[in-house]
Image 1 (spheres, rainbow over the protein chains, first blue to last red):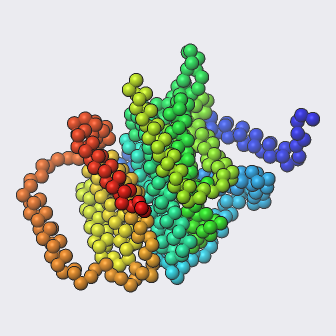
Image 2 (image 1 turned 45 degrees about the vertical axis):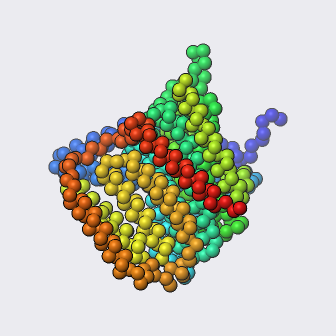
Image 3 (image 1 turned 90 degrees about the vertical axis):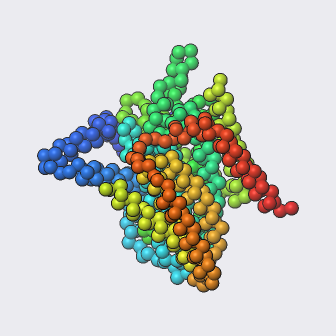
Length: 387
Length: 161
């Protein structure tokens, strides 16, 4: 017997997935490039404003509010999907089923139910805590993450702020979240939280350095800090004897591309405090680390920020190493999302297959391995540029 | 008009944070206010059109140096913050010194005439790069040498034996 016998439910699942893929690609082709649609809506809005003599700054203000709402909506929906996905993937990696009941088909509504539960839960501030620091910490963790999304190119023309210092802006602003984690650790007035905060501060400062330096070769090749320009420089193909072999993505650049990618990937996993680098919230040592004392909505903000950072790192990797939204047939935003979620899967895969690193080994790994190799990579790029 | 409102509100917040840094009781809170003050300086840079400088200010000062500072301050507990004040009995002489410095700076600023100009919101990264590796290469290298020496010195002093 070559083909495995499928059970009734497996057949149904395959049917549902095939139908989703079919309808999805049909709908996507119907919608086309999103920036075209958005500019149509923009022109329409401006026409209405002209007819009713509304001042132009109100139109641009409303447009900003709409852009922010779109980003918030994208973050929350994608995080909901990622949480469900993580639970399903982890379950299947451990020969379980994961959530199966809520919503009917493979527990798809589980995260929605969880979110409603978190909204309704009692908000607790411990007696020993510093109330203001405790209250502000989740906000300070999430807001920088949201700010970073403004400079993320979701495809052709789909970027709310195409900054000239795009990549540097994302690195700078995302570094602010550590302060929120440290505030949570100190403000909770709990020794486990404090230890978690201390570990988070040390880890993120150490891993930030090779993370920034690993991107420098790409900046040297493209000569720009603009994310759209970096993504745009990777269109076309690497060809061998005139035959196109691989897409002209930076990840396929011999040696330098792979080295930069691996360093960036490892540091991104460390920056999001996920296993194997989750010493800041190590369950077996620190209860839950810096968010031990949080419940309800505040806890869910930490959760939201963690997953939003996973997607942000994936999106950055797509723009830096996989040529952003370049690809055949489908519009660019679909390619961007497909590539990014492939990286998200990589993050989830890491979490459920690697054991946690010890604190001293974690530090040794970044200072004695990642940092020298990222310097070497920059040196190599310099030599190649000189030749 | 809008720029002026933004400038004055940012400056007000900056001064507020700066005063809080030296007056607030808990060391940890004063570190947080310092983060606020440094971020406001970055906002002023943005307002002046220095985008690269603003990003580096956030990246190095708030994301790097301040996190290390907080790392050291974190070991002060929540309860300890309520017991000790930051200000001791020497506050009158230090206030006089500060006022003298303030007057000095004020007089200095009064004597210099500033050239009126409009802010150009153009990318600054390229210009900075060519300047640092072109005309300003010698000071740039000297500064990096000093930093390297201080790094080596810090490691030398913090060694156990």
